[in-house]
Length: 362
Image (cartoon, rainbow, N blue to C red; front, side):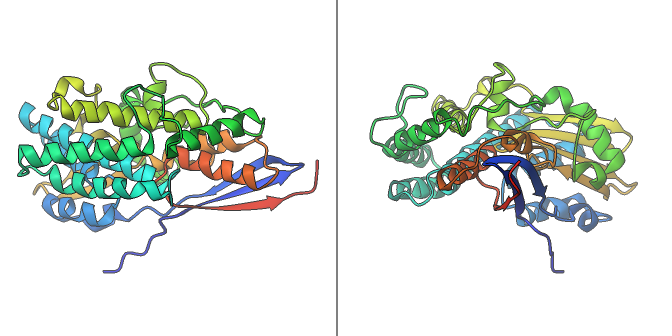
């Protein structure tokens, strides 16, 4: 079977008198995972997830396993849960590293060690890897980040390094008046929203997942949202990049300290029973909060399945990206670069196209 679905987001900006007056988002097409899994054993769907999702595949598998266990009324043992948390956080490190490689530092010659570090992370942190190989992988990652400018002090980048130059450019764009820090009008998605999200996802399926909202609210999810839950503040591209670096370095310290569960945030993996044979799960992956719902038939096979990825919140037609861009200045090439940077700051791993439509001056 050939799967045809559109995996790019198209963003169209209407500009009048040098200011963005309207933002239109044509979302990607979600893979028809529910239709493919219906009537099949759970193992078939679990095996298919890495082929269907190139991003956060481990988080998807953990979410489905947790949802199935909730549907069966058989939660995972503490050791199994800890192993899953460890796998999700290790994947988060890889995705945050990849975000630097594909996003704001794309094309910089200093990123080659980072690309090698990502490959080492994917290979060196498997269950069968030796302690020495894992230590070597960690050292390689830290050396690659040091070359980019990440030092021991949080939020401070070594002068003359790629990250220092990038942060200076992002801050200058904000200070020039074209890109001030844009507040999120919708707040941050959190575990407190899980019950409402999974209940609607179970009841409404794709109709909810394609354009989710909670009582008119379209909250942001992802790295910045995780930090903003504790200290809400407006953030531009520079602050969002700094938040990603801060989370990455914190996760590397967690790995270095022995990967104790106490170091993870609360509700990183959560399961919810929704009735006989029905279960749901939420997983805080690199790109934000991921939700799965599943219903099992009398034989224990998949009767129905659906999911809601972080992208659908951030790139909602009335969501955080739209709120952030509307009203900002767009006067020339530098401002257009700032638009790209701001969109990528929400999710650097998601592909998007940008079209600017000049309107008659107001």
